[in-house]
Length: 374
Image (cartoon, rainbow, N blue to C red; front, side, top):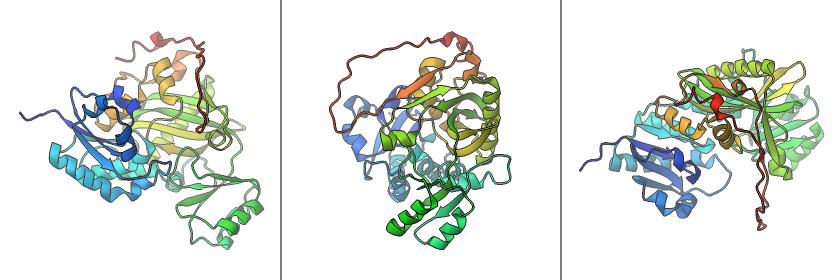
């Protein structure tokens, strides 16, 4: 008997998302790298309609998925031939947002476009698209292996001493260098050269914040604004615990929301979740850092689900399918009249650790939003 349930193809997959996936009403296929397949629980594997195994390394180099697009396209074509054209290509994670958009274009499936996905991946292009707007952003320059030392010196000459060199399309502070002086940067370049797909950027001194939410039909229907108490860079490079607390200052929150709405319009993100980072500098001014068309990492998803009742993973899936959100009217974390926070502790990767206790002292007030979410 022919199975007429709609077919969904997930580009990238992690078992933590399984509870947000509707295996009853949809046929689910995934395209994922070998490591996930090798560690995939049989209870999940047995629920899959199709499986495409991608041969890319299991590491933090997110651009390897773009480099593997011919293989990804071939796997998608095979899944389509075997199980039918998908209702949607679902992309839950940073490294697959652009590959999924490219698949949508190739196979004429609706959803976030290649242009928007590119603007939410390439840190140079996303700042270029803000030129001419009221949004401030760091001074920047795209660099690669052909960039000369004279070109670098010309760019950094008017800037303050501290500088940043980072990849154009990575995440989680992967491959980021922070230099205390122009001389330190020049020495690094002389000794190591410049890699392709990189950018130079002025260092911004300010409080690093992150804005997370859901946009549907071009309208923000859920919005959260938070301040980091530490940074991802220090978490990755200095083993410092990472923490964040939601903003409860109404003026700052409103400014952050307006700031975010301008950026969403500029990048053209109409349906999806997003994670945006910006600096708060004196005089309560925001300076854009970067945006991604996916939900935030670390403690963002569990906090939003546990405290506010908003499942960002499920909302991403619904948005990629262009199906209605579970949120019936626009809401924000400020509506709750209390702050919440998460703490992300680095665990030594080469040592065996044992959790001896879990202490919880947070008051959850879901009833505040109970009438607004189905």
